[in-house]
Length: 480
Image 1 (tube, rainbow, N blue to C red):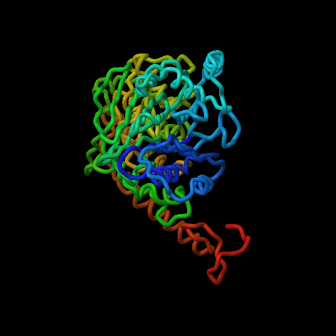
Image 2: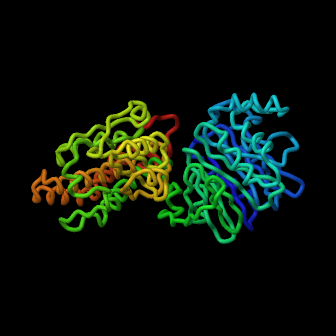
């Protein structure tokens, strides 16, 4: 997934954009760029490769712009070249630029139509059609232009646009890919992840699919079909430390050692002595007793958490469980009914196929429950009820603490279902709750034992580097 960061406010935009892109590096990329609104026009800097190349190309700040866009790209359409890097502009003299994550699936048809109207394309990307469409629809109102362009696009994407004639305005829209707005004091951010602006503000808006977002230093407006709707910001329950490595070589190493605390927080006050208290499941006790089937839909690591969930739900609640890969399940025309519970698991709450699976289940008459790590995300809107893991920000691409927290939360859910269905004796439920209470401490003990074992073998638990007897890093010796 590419990275987006936009800023409008009172501070110089360039350092904030570069900082935001650095916060998004964990997503991976092959090129990057920024666009700044300067007095004479939009100023673009793009580079292929590491962000250091972009920083070098951008040079010392030297800019007083307080309004700009940044992007890191994973190539889908078009080669990895500076010409194809974002932000993209319609022509060399254009006052307009956009960044786009995702794919415009009908870009060939749109491109042919635009070329027949005289538009000239300068990149090999599918995203460039969006610039030309906005240029075509623009009549002095950038927001209205995007309102008209959005229905023409097919695919999954997040778009943010900037125009020189609209100082201190960024306009965006999302469709099945993440886009979040950060609210500061007299300044606003728009990004593909809260990680991009978490060091600046923890107040965030989470737009829904199809909402046009207009961001100025004074705040944000949200429009559906051209009509403004009310949105309230949420406090993101993470801090900047979540986005730092904390002395570890990698985010993944850090998050492996954060697993005990993630499980401890996820269990938290849900277990009070021998009492299990979960948030509303969206089901009455009678509906739980009458459940005939549970379907767990997820992708990647979350799917494997669902596989573990199958074992505990079937063992304790005595109801059949079917874990499915969401991206395949949605094309199966699944058989669903009101006595089926569909659980969608997504760490980010934005996994496209999982969100679509939950939506399909709800529209087909099944009951739906989301398991996710972040409030306000798309899956929480599609499901009837939500259970949150409490892991903090997970930056590592290979999931660790979110997986273990999902398994812990599914275990609590299984016990709650078992209690309502009376499929386990109460003393056995109490015994399992006691063991779950002990789990974070046992995990910490295990990880400390691992660290001591690595140290005894000449390795660092944090850096996992080979150590010579004298303590200096070994030359060319592998970690064994």
